Length: 171
Image (cartoon, rainbow, N blue to C red; front, side, top):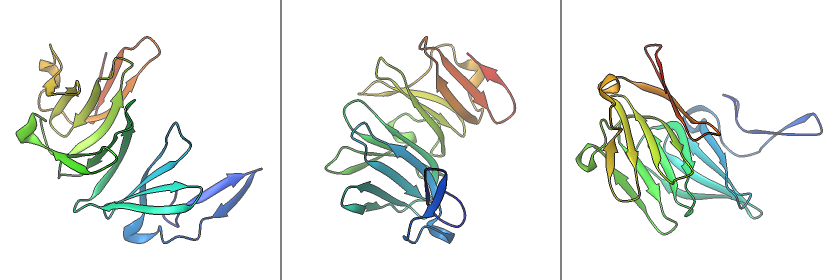
């Protein structure tokens, strides 16, 4: 996606998708599910799914979406926001999690999931893990408290790499 909208590249040819995905509807995140469906999040809070029938608006969230989506093994879609918390779509409803549920901050910068099923959430004030029941801070994460987590990656050895917006890298 670009500021001009959504494009698809096939056989080295770019084709613009004729949907209104520019300006405030700029796409902030794309994610392909294991079923081949494409999930999109727009800056103005739209969560859409694209399948063989086309685009379907799943929900208009009252939040600015920051550009992070994650699908867990049970098919739940996690959607991070700029300052409204973390939404999860379970395919029947959307729920919102925030500081009251144990997140360090309501600004969600990045998401990653490991093979054990822990969802890692990088926020504007530290790191949290979600085990399917509760949000918890990473044990021994004193160096991360208050830091803005800018990127997360689980490598092929299931090690969590953590990048901060002030230029630090933690393993």
